[in-house]
Image (cartoon, rainbow, N blue to C red; front, side, top):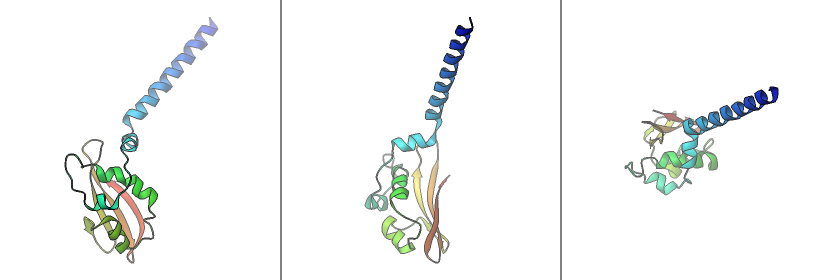
Length: 127
């Protein structure tokens, strides 16, 4: 009898872990983004127009951009050469509109913080 209880407890634990893993996959924002990642292409980024078919292109390229380019330390002119004219720019930051995200009704921006015309930090903001 004790062996049966242990076996049933083990099976229940395995089922709960499996369901937790499935829930993580289904509800994780990064998973969807991971499946749709696209290699960064400067010309595609610069010439991007938000349409129904290409609305997520910049979101899809953002991981490749931030992973393969050392944005921190680049000058504002180098960023403009790489990404084109920003959506908004001031002395302290530059931002690039990313279009629609692939999860819910969500848009965002790549925001580059500047000090003396050099990128010191960046973030991707939602909303």
